[in-house]
Image 1: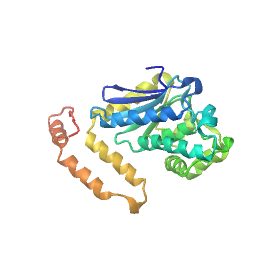
Image 2: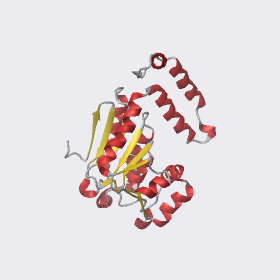
Image 3: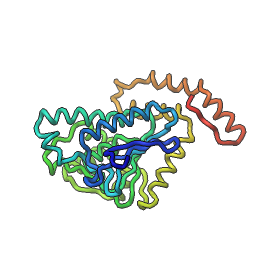
Image 4: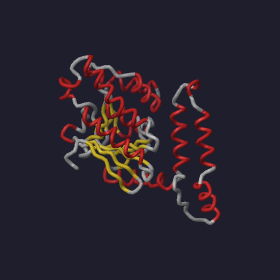
Length: 262
C-alpha cells in the first residue's frame, strides 16, 4: 500500500486519504487525481465513516501542487491543459462537495494545488513548520476563478490577492492569524490535535452535521441560487430521526448519546 501514489483507509469512524509522492513533495499527477476521486466515492457510500482527513506522506509536504515534471506530457499546451483541468477539477469538486466533514492535516509545504485542495476542505490544521503559498505568477500559469474565489472566501479578497500577486510563502503562524488554518501544533502533536476534532465529530449526530455542511455550501452560492427548501427538508429529517430521540433520552439520562445517522 505504501508504494501507491495515493491511498485510503479507515480508522474507526474516520476515513483517511494520503497523497504518497514524498520524493516530489506529494506533487499530484493525473493518475493520482483518478485514485483520489475513487477513494472519496467509496467513503461517501460508507455509513460508518463520519468524517475524512486528507494528508500528505513523508512530513515534508501536504501537497505541493501539480507534478511539474509531467507538464511536458500532461500540460504541454492549451488542449492538454483543458484535459488536465477537467480531471483535476473533478478531484477538487469531489472533495468540496463531499457530504461529510473534511479536514486537511498539513505538514510541510502546502503550495499551489495543495492550497486549492486545502481550501476545498471544511477545516485545516497544520504543524508549526508548515508553509503556504500560490506560486502561479512565478510559473506563468493561469489561476482559475474557483481557486481564487475559494481562497478569498477563507482569508478575504485582499489577502488572496497578496498570495497571488507576490507568490510569497506564509508561515503556519501567519496562516493561523489570517484564518486559513484553525489550529497549529508541533508536528509531534498534530495527529492528536486532529484526532480530537475528528473524535468530536464522530460522536455527534450525522444528520445534524450533514445539514450544517449542506448549509455552508449553500451560503457560498449567490442568494438567487440557494436551495433553502432542501435545507428545510434536511432539518425536518433531523427532527423525525431516531437520533433526535436518542439525543433527548441521553440528555435526560445524563449519558453520552449513541447516534446512528438515522
